Image 1 (cartoon, rainbow, N blue to C red):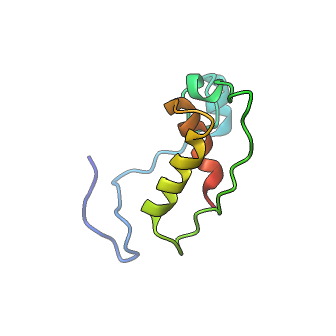
Image 2 (image 1 turned 135 degrees about the horizontal axis):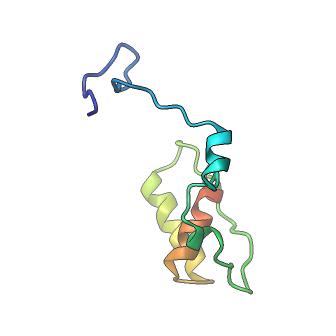
Length: 92
């Protein structure tokens, strides 16, 4: 259960911290990436080119960043897997 009391640092605290080591992850066959294997292993379209999008850095409107991102990716693909796989590359 998560304690929803905000600590002095401004972060929410949990009653117990769980640490997962690289050894444990390797033993379980886990990968150190945020995607399921279907997204990680999906190929980009053959015509894919690097996006000409400024990295998001909190100084611009996040909604505008996402709209511009979707517009640029849609030139190559409307597949959600491609959008999921490439979005992290637009963050600073």
